[in-house]
Image (cartoon, rainbow, N blue to C red; front, side, top):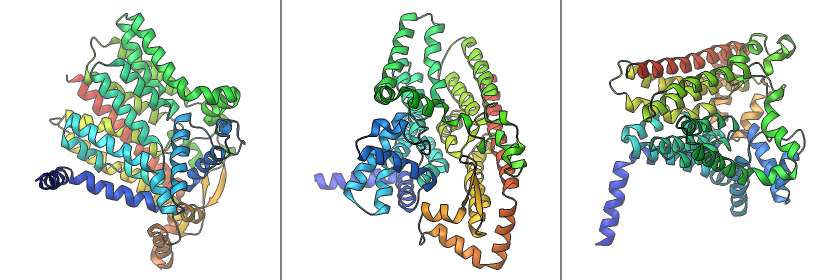
Length: 444
């Protein structure tokens, strides 16, 4: 009888959660098939410090090592990777184990959204390509997105302390997200709850220090330089509006003004201050208000960020899902949902098809703005996947087809044009989201 009930329960679960089962199969296939070797090679250097018992010195490492992250991603990667290499030598299995925190976060976001906002919310999360892109390439932003979502849920429940903990953890994944910690703090301040404010600040500091202190004490200067100022000298890149002059100059760094590397800070700071000014003027706080300000703040971080990686868009996705299910009668909700699915695909898959993939087909190079050097696109794909992978097979197939070879050759020659187009498209979409959210808020 118990076996019958167990079988029935499993069948019922699969029936009611078929979408997440299918999504997990896709995630597993993506996890084992590739990762973005250009970034992962630096993560592997973190593990080299760990394996020699020198992890605390990772921020004091060679200037050629990439360690621009707070400690939490470092600790997550080295601990999971240690388990992976201890269990197997298969690169596919290692990738899968390494990406388990990402897959777990992907699932956790689905179940939180579904529990709090219904099955449609879970479905909308699975329909957006952002989470799959993160798992395929390996970035930590989906973990940050989970902490942001949990922080928002706790804030909506009125638990400012738990919200602060989650938002602090999000900032320990990507430091720029620290601006959202101000939300629970400002609520305390506006309510003149100075004791609660001190307690909330103490919680945020305590959570941060748990992870930061060992690395900070080992080499304070190196830690601060890497975590806070690593990006300071880097030129804008990817889908950042501030990268447009570099694309327009055909990657000629000498042709763009030097202030381009820091000017983004000014509009971002002004935007954030204005948003928080209006936040303090709100007569009362409820979930609708929190949703509006989470979305507006995150859009500011995306639009005014000089590092315009599509992976950052993952932070915003859970809140777009909540907005869609909370506003089913919005006159443009169908357009909103259509763009929610289509623009991310265009800003990731089609964007990379017209740049990295096109360059690989043409046996050409791509300009890595991060390092200001040219690298073989084919080599990037090979190291990120394998010679037998579907992606590299497509590269070879397109290269051997005369018409496709010409097409991708033309795309390769016009890479900056493609990057300008997709950068404008992506940021126009973010502006559209902001307009819709603010317009909806005015009608309430």
